[in-house]
Length: 598
Image (cartoon, rainbow, N blue to C red; front, side):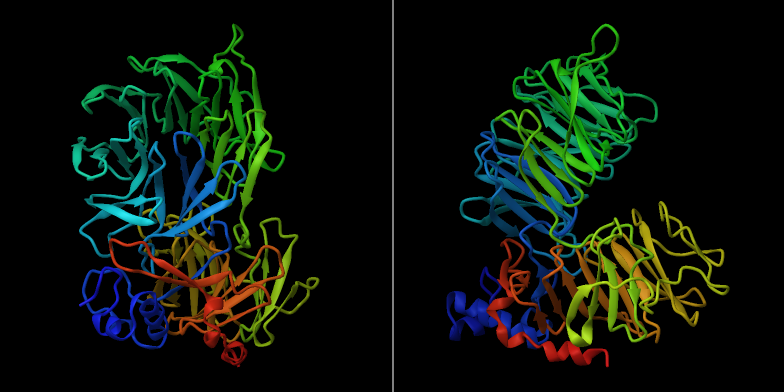
């Protein structure tokens, strides 16, 4: 038997309280996980070593704030939820839901209750041990999961609390449409008919009406009793994404994923009222919002200029003048695409971006604070991960510019700036006379090997390729997995990865498949078995690094012991605990890594 914290009763007998949890962690580092946690359909029971740099290490998808605009909450593919102070951008806390070794625990949507007491969070949450997905309702002050809303049919893409905090609306990424739950008991009180495509966004008006966007091209409105009221098909082939009621509830702004358009509609019948001026928009404006007084309309997405994503802010609610123009300013936000904008009560706007990054701009467009990635960004470097014959030396980019490169030598545990070209390291082979892989670059949804289509999961996109120098096999990296195929085209192994595989290479001796991932790590996989042997994290400051193995040994540079730690699940209904690696010096074994690639 185990208690609510997942601690076996025999362990509690000898070590009470927090001591037993620490002993459980240390014991599970060397004892098979199956011995400690034998029950079925429960969260993974062993420690999982994770990066913790103070900022998200994966795509930061969504943000929300309490009604007073005091705090921001953000969620990410890195499986963490972070709460920030709006005033100075200080990190208040990092909360961790139960996770698995694959995608389980990646967070896609978040909603902050108006009173700031409850956070609803969801994503790839629950399917490994539930009969469906779940939403976690977290008590912010207590730092505990208050309730789980379970048996959801699909992953949620967006959520919103009603203005009075009594209801939580969620929309789904396939065809389940809309569901509404009461708070705090989590009772489902409404489920829509299936949609024809994924739903993307839901927003409440002050009087309780709702509007939902979907990639089937329709906007759907519901009255305050959640009954369908108006549905309208927008521009043919259009993909409406973000939607937002104006503060007075009379207008609805719509942003699109597939075009540089923002439309303002009547909230009575969804007829078009006007089109704000999008002159000079380079990209799309899929996220939209209104200032608290309704005088300003905002839009953002992939619109960019001068190396920065831009948030467009229109005065007069975006209403154009007689010549079809309107006053606007473009405010620089971040290097990556803006995932969401959130107007604040103060008159400013918060944003989250794909870098990952998040921040707050004041009403004039000046940064109140910005928090940017503190991890290396390997995106766009599919051909720039270089490796040595034994795999003991790797060269990599710190950012997509290619101008900041590093070199790490494993058997010396040495990080240095990469030397000038001609280092003798091997670039990824992407084509040979005997191995012809096509379609892996670009949209990466249909990949062929010598004319034979390779298996890919739904929504998976390939992004990197590395061929063995002797043409015996090739490795294919994707948005969430790494596969090795034999020369015959047979799949030898597949592993889930904690981020996109932006680059992959094969050591000259063919023993190692080395991958650079979206979480800022470089990982070594045994080419024969597909087992991960070690991982390297290098900070964006180009000074600190940490290395670890599945046996939970680690090595760190001075000052880097706080960059990694062990995530330990406590069961389905409890937030996980996190133990920084520095608390366990007995597992710091630099000599282990120096010998690993001999």
